[in-house]
Image (cartoon, rainbow, N blue to C red; front, side, top):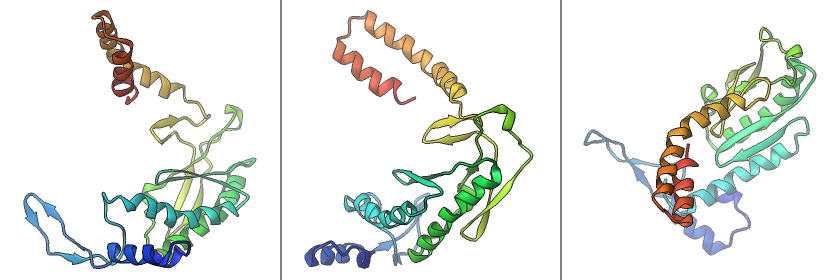
Length: 208
């Protein structure tokens, strides 16, 4: 990781070297502790430098994906989404596969294992007339195959239907917020200030 941070000064690299090296980890479950093991990779969880080091580490991957013109890479926190379009499922697969190869290479360079089981490949349609649930194509990711299927997916807390419709998600969210909206109405009737109501709305309703 330190070798991939050329823009940092010598003192900063030396500090990070001391921060990352010589760390021991152990597992605690039901008041039972495992033996300590020397951590040879990774960043301490909960540390202040962790998010910044992650950004430096993943920046190289995004640069590589930026050179793939057949698909677009979108990233929020540690969630990476690839978007490609085509006339049919085979064209979409052909456009997506070139972006998966750099991910496999980058993961191997950083001693990371790709969990294909936690990855999804979904096919969306703009018209129900072109929809076909029977066609399925596999993509190659890491050491496994990722099957493209037409199904709804949950992306960053939002459910997206096969026809790129978020209507069912909006209906579900409305039902979930209904009891809380009723409670907010009672708080307002009790004479709460505008500032108090706004705080309740942000913390109590927006989290649904």
